[in-house]
Image 1: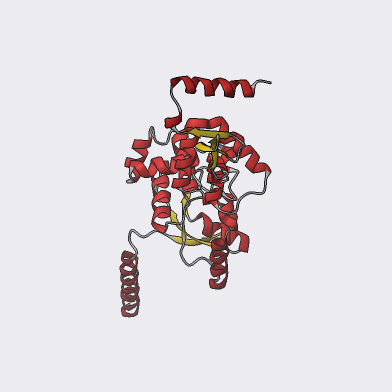
Image 2 (image 1 turned 60 degrees about the horizontal axis):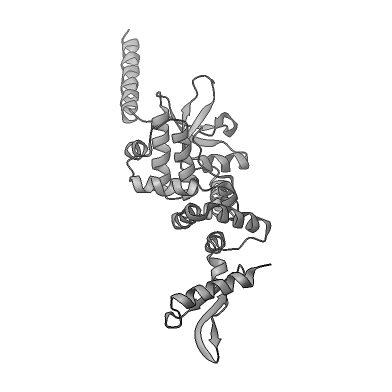
Length: 293
C-alpha cells in the first residue's frame, strides 16, 4: 500500500512539472513542418512571378537549402473546408523556396478564426516591415482588395492598415498603369512612384501619344534603365534628340532661329523686334502657302 502511494505521489509530481512547462507555452502558436503541397498561396498573394527569378530570391533559396529548411517560419491559417490544408498569411517566398527544394516548410499555424481583414493586415504589415515588396506588387495587392470590396475606399484601406493616404495613392498609381506601358519595362518590379507619376501625367495630357510610343517601344529592344523607358514613353527621349538651333537669317541679318525635334517637327522662332501685326500675318500666309500640296 505504501509503495502504491509512493508511486501516486511520484506521478502527481511529474504531472505538476508538465503543467508548469505547459504554462510556459500558454498563448503560443503551434509550429509544425508541413508539406509545401498542402499549403496554398493567399488569395491576396502579392508576389509578381518576376520576384521568384531575382538574385535575391536565389540567395534566400540557397540559405534555406544550407540550413536544411526555413529557420524563420511562415504563417498559415487552417482552411476550414479543406481538412489538412492551409493558406499562407505571410511567407510566400519562403514557401516557394521550400517547394522548389522539395523540403518541408516550417510554419506557425493559427488555429483561431482568422478573417480576411486580419489576414490582409498581417500580410501587409509583414511586407512593409521587411521592406522587400516593390511598389507595383504593393499596389496590385491594394487594388485587388479594393476591387473585391474588402475595403470600400482608399481612405478606409489606409486607415485599417495604419498607413498614409499618400502611400496608398502612390502605389496604386504604379499598379494602375496600362498594361502596354508596364510591358515596356524589363520587369514591373522596376517601376517606382516617380516613374508612375511622370507617366500618369503624360497620359492625362496625351494618352494616345503615350500608348502609341509604348507600342513602338515594345516592338524594339527595350532600354536597360527604367528611366530611359519613362523618357521614351513621355516623349522626352525625342526632345533630347532635338537638333541644335540654327540661325534664321534674312538679307544677312539673324531674325530668329529654327530647329527640328526627334519626331521631325519643325520649330521656328522669330524675334519680336522683326514682327508687327502686318508681318505676323504675312509670315503665317507664307507658311500656309508653302505647305499647300
